[in-house]
Length: 350
Image 1: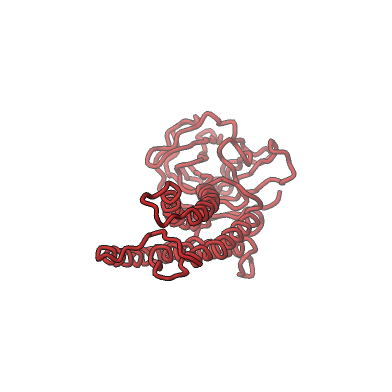
Image 2: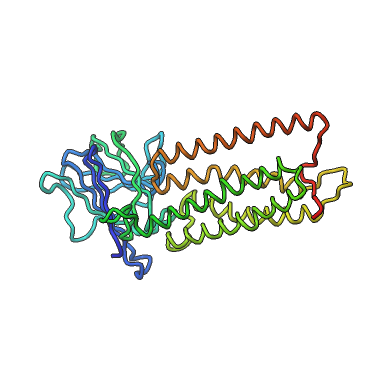
């Protein structure tokens, strides 16, 4: 195996350990092993691949005759997650005994690392749940009573935990934090700066060069660097969660926007009496990128398992930025209403 790690909740008295397979094995032999442990009176134990209990969920419980039921489920929140048609994906681990041991419920099971739309990554958020009432039967379709405890845990399964034994950050954490800082600068500082220049600094003779320069010489290098760091941290590109998918969309949109922007400025006609389609595209694609970037940051924070304080700081920053943007927009509207009109995308001579 290449790595294992564990998580324990003291208030729920529930622990789980996850072991990844050797990377060199063929896909049909890459079994991920799970070890769940709790008090002997536990009703059912659940672990989900990803955040929340609304995605891929594995529920397991001890039956009255000492056997173990494994139930692969999906959906849920607010409804009970339902058993899927792929129960054969789950197996009890051969040569390991599941059941009551030293007054503790211990269950060993395994699942292939990749099954259809669910992949277990080296760095992964897991959701877990604990129910006190045991299902009434052995059937994987048995009704689950609502959990009394649930939470998320971010685990690095490649022997690079959140912190090393010496208390210093691991290589993985350093890479992720570097990625976060670089991308925050790109999407939430530099890109808004370019927008502010285009909207509020058109009285400057060099505003277009400044607007273009920020994006080409700052935003683009930052975005490429941030993606490279993320690629190294994750061990390759994996479109396995909304943060990664949205990141790819933003990456593509950025270069489309730059291309349209160059075309727009080169084709600008000061004598035109209409707004061409490429100008509309440049405006609205730019706005869409900013909005998507605003949502992208908290997705990344959630994926990494950042503390809530980081979310509060981020939301405060976004709120202040939007307030400043609104105030400046109102002032610009008033100035234009008094006859100080400015072509929103006027091209200045170099």
